[in-house]
Amino acid sequence: MMSPQHIAKRLRRWLPWKSGASLLVSEIMFLAFLLYVFAFHTFEERENPNLELFDSVWVAFITMTTIGYGDISAKTDAGRISTIIFSIITLGCFSTVASQLITKLSDIHERRVKGLVRLRLNGHILIVDWSKNPDKITTVIENLRTDADTCESPIAIVSEAFEELPNRVADNFDDIYFSHGSPTNANTYIQANVAEARTAIVFASGEDSSADVLTAAAVGIIDDLHPRLEIVAECLDKQNEGLFRRNGCERIVFTGEIVPLILSKTAIDRGVGPSVFATLDTRTESTLYSIQDAQLDGYTFAQISKCLVELEERVLPQGVIRGRRIIMAPEKDFMVEDGDGLILLGDRKHAWNATGKSGLRQRLLDQLGIDKEEIG
Image (cartoon, rainbow, N blue to C red; front, side, top):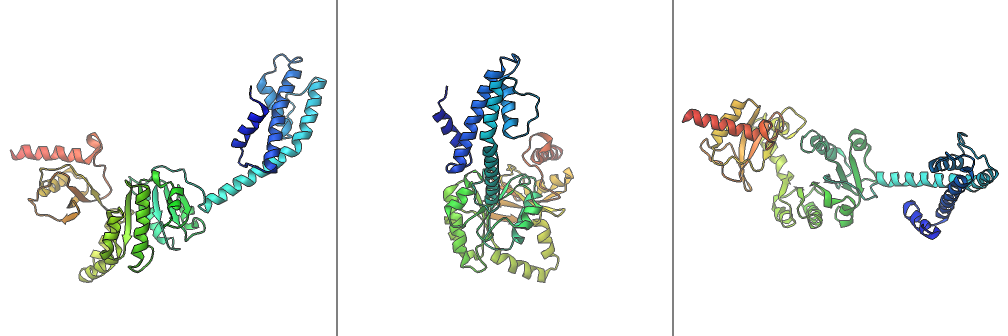
């Protein structure tokens, strides 16, 4: 049997407060509760042999909370006296503990809203933001939520620009969390549980090329904490590409070049600008996506394109990924090699490697086999 000291030690571990008057009151209430259950059961069992231990616990609880249903009550003098003593002891204790518990829970909720608690997430996506403008965050979340691969992933926003999660984000999306702190402080990412994250998206820390130094520093800290994490980072000046690659980032978006390219291309062909946004935005009816390892070596790009059309899946190949090279609209006899990926344009992001007929790759291979037999 545990001693009172051992019980008190266990109680301190369970309670949300570790010291002070609240802890003392909680210990008194808890010990009084146990003693009363023992006393009530001992005294009343003589009068009521069918009385179970849980009945005594029930009486203790409704007495302590002043509910007093009266379905079970003391019949013996000793039971009534112990009930009076227990009521006097716990009347004030319960109110104090309940008040402190509510205050503590409110404090935990406030700290969570302000991003000051460690997140218990798994397989989540980190969005590292530096600005006070939630528009970029909102656009990214909307696209993540409309993609089949990321629609159910929790999202943790890392920023010191906001005091708490912006209402525009909190009110419009579910499963969004916030970690407040500097993006160049390792503790911020530890608090966001970066070790269990699946992807990190790092926005540029400013609007000129000098901001790339801070952005790359944040990338380096994330890579140190989770070397296998996929990091997508915004780089303003392509000349700073080496900073990001040395810090473990292979997926770099050069936003400083995107805008001039789109502007000049739209000036030449006014339909290009809108089409670029339409293919990149997963919220539209068409989306551009990639298969990193298509596993279609030995077939030409033309054969793959022809068979995809025959499958009537509303998906067309646009290019081939070979290492870091992107080969758009290759020659018809261009041979796909082992490890090559595909860039596809479709009405949605199709399941590629799913088993059986639900996988687009398997159906494509079947169609390629049919075509080869017909040619033979």
